[in-house]
Image (cartoon, rainbow, N blue to C red):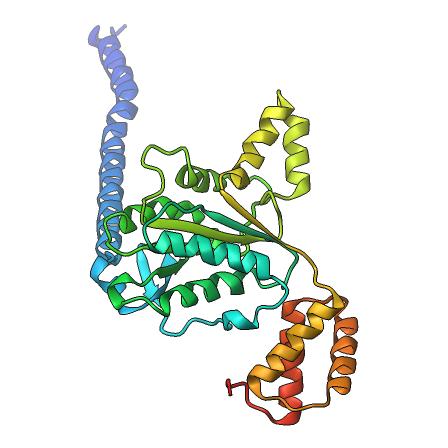
Length: 322
């Protein structure tokens, strides 16, 4: 009988060992490929970030001399507004007390004296935002070019970029009204914390040359169900509500706007008609104006202006001041 060579077992073991090592050896190139892919992705992201940074415009303080009003964009751009959409201060009827308070506060600020951030809250269409724009224009009427107030509008959805805007304005020689129209917060929106830090409480705080004016239909800037939800889910309900309500408390000046009476509404309509030279019998004007407000279900400065546009268009009158 023939004998099997003794080294056969050794070969078998060697073959088995090589079989076990093969997968491990196969994994090494794959691992290197993964590492190379990660590196390429990281390098590509760095290039994209560099391009985006280079493309983002760097605001220039000198450009603030080009206009009296700007719109802030969160990428750092201040877009000049050559012609502000506004009405004359004298046309704002039924809000005399709020008008006088805001004008006085704005005048003090323009002269470098202490002044308060202002929250204009209340009924829709009663001239809150119109008053801010009219007050800005009124203060600038008698001021030299280098002393004119600048109005900067920041949109509600861009509130989180407010600290960046403050950093930009801090080094300017101009004085600024930063204005946010229809400011309110809903749901899980936590961007109000950026506004709180700017109003009061942050390390740097609000620059001396900046004041904030905001309008809202809500006195506390928050929906009632949002406050109630905070109360029901918090460990200490009182603390949760205080955290939310304290935002509006940081505006030193609260100006409430309420629904106007019938006489105030008619005074608004007559004021517009007189200003724009719309000729119509007073009795007919009152009848049509009241009918218009009834179809709208409300009386306000906005409704009065909408009726004026309707009447002027029907009578062929262009809305240019006489």
